[in-house]
Image (cartoon, rainbow, N blue to C red; front, side):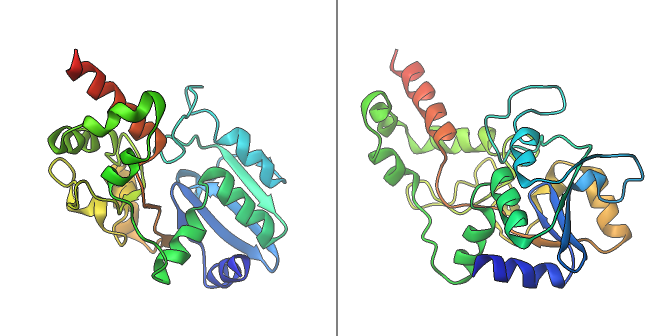
Length: 225
């Protein structure tokens, strides 16, 4: 079902997921590029297997390991040429696990965002101390860790103590209709004004990730000394 819906979307034109642009170039043949290369005339490194995405996503332009898949530092200079929607879906999931299926579930009303307190209550062992973080500290961390231009491109749906953590983040960070890439690249904003863009698939965050929880632990440990 997911692949069928993905195929229908691609028939309507190119789509944008995170830093990816995906398009059907001819019936049954698809191309995935970094958005910065979408209109590039430069020669790109061509791959013909979706599994190549696993290597592309691993390191940024400087060769640094990308621990957070949603970080706005996916390297450019490549092109995936794929022969089926199944491969396209696999590639998208390698780049951004569950991004397309999460969006479809959100559209059907099947997604329930998880409050940060619920996430922290589930923590055990060395992460149990994360439950002691204050709302102010959590808000401050979200403002630093989740900024679209330097942290993560996902749109936040989860809350902190039942409230949107917008004290240090723009309201657009919580709007599924907002383009998070505009927050981190002026060129994209200018390109958008100059012409049509691919249809954007919202890149959603329904629960604080493990890396965020790890940062919570660091804060609690520092303040407990």
